[in-house]
Length: 153
Image (cartoon, rainbow, N blue to C red; front, side, top):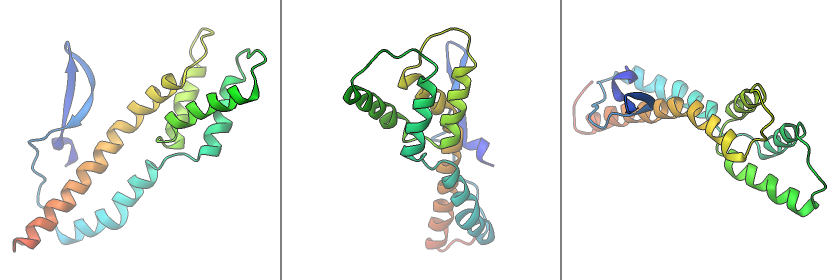
């Protein structure tokens, strides 16, 4: 049902991801379907997309960077650098950060990741679930507007 509310984004004929089809009109749903969405599906998806704990991110980044040589850096600079990582990664769920880190560690080569490298790996992982959440809320809002207009789904 949600797939009809999505469109493929292409650049030079190459798939770049999904976005909301702004012309999509949500289908009519029943009161029981609305109840299930609001009490079960939407909260589960919101929990799935909940940002990771900042303390966990701090530990994960320290572990990730420990694979690379780090010269003696003043503690103040280390704290500031970790702050950069946390600032960028704190908006993503733990599962996405972990998957992006594992993907980076599995790459050949010795290049040290930058915060944006891991954030990019998170971004594409959460894009479709976040779009699904947005479309589910549109379904619920559409249902509620129909009821307030006197229509019965």
